[in-house]
Image (cartoon, rainbow, N blue to C red):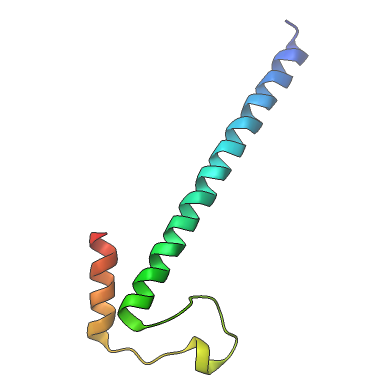
Length: 77
């Protein structure tokens, strides 16, 4: 096998590995986002974590003990 063929095979293997990692990372991000959404909805009645582009939708007054509670839930999850 020539050096060029070995190099091409190496590139193909790297690309396959990169695609596998990307798919796994995408799935993990989706699971994390869904979990954070559930936590925010349960503890703060926040329907979405997406930016609403207005103060009324994006900023909330939250008591420090509620923030602590959510951080504990996330920490122990």
